[in-house]
Length: 85
Image 1 (spheres, one colour):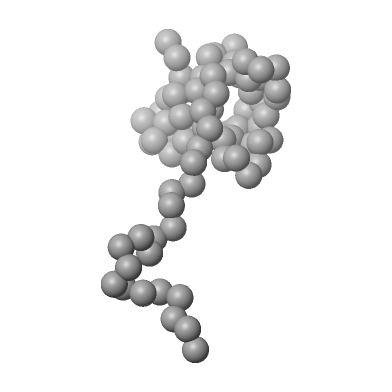
Image 2 (image 1 turned 60 degrees about the vertical axis):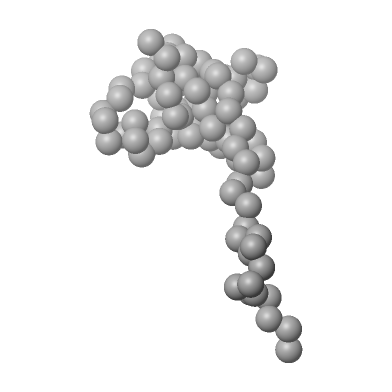
């Protein structure tokens, strides 16, 4: 039987998932702290606020310019990581 984990190998860890970041504008507030965000490329996604923003009580309102992180696996959902002033 072959062992999949070899501690002598240097690169035995999975690479960190690459995230895509896009600027957008919040168009609608939805229940459960989720938002509809229109990206600069005219796509609309559903996004929620990141934990750090929730922890620091950063308010996000309709019309705010935000930075959204998305995974390449699901381009319909995202995480709001920054609200521009």
